[in-house]
Every structure is written in structure tokens, then in C-alpha cells.
Length: 111
Image (cartoon, rainbow, N blue to C red; front, side):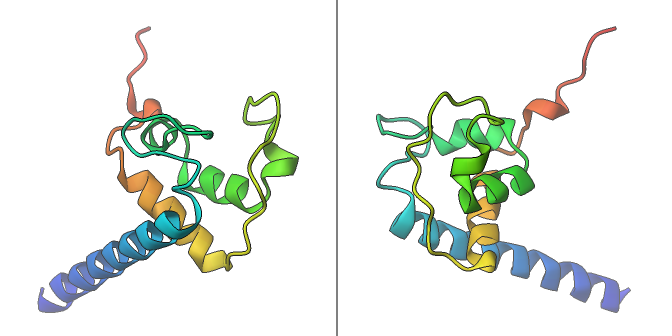
């Protein structure tokens, strides 16, 4: 029982650390073009992105926006390719995903 609680604690601490690291990377690299929870900016608000996109999609798009902008429904790409490490992209995606606890795909569809 103690080992299970320790494992849960360590996993939770690790996730929190990734979110905090992602928040710092976001502030340094993304916040110039993207807002969180409203405001005007060149790129979409990350709270809205968090609601509609999976972490893996956020990571993939941030890594290579030019090849994915049409697939994501944008008519043009204004996002630069960022010189980040793979883990930094994942951390940013963790941070963005943490902004919205409820996701579009969680909505139950009526039959």
C-alpha cells in the first residue's frame, strides 16, 4: 500500500513538474503570439486549443507547424518552427492541456 501511494505521489509530482516547466517554456517562446484565457494575439488562445486538441496533436503541431497547418484547419501558417528539445515540446503540451480539464471529446453524444 505504501509503495502504491509513493508511486502515485511521484507520478503526480513529475506531471506537475512537467506542467511548470512547460509554463516557463510557453512564457519564453509562445506567449508573444498566444494568450491564455482571453485577450488578443496573433495565434489562437491556448485555453481553446486545450479544449479541442490532444497533447500529442499539440506537440506535433508545435514541432512542425508548416506541414500540419492545413490538417489542423488553418488556411495559412504564421507559426515559426521553434528551436526546442523534444521534452520541451512535450512539457509545453502538458501545460496547455492542463489549462482546460474538460475536453471536447469528453462530451457524451446523444443517440
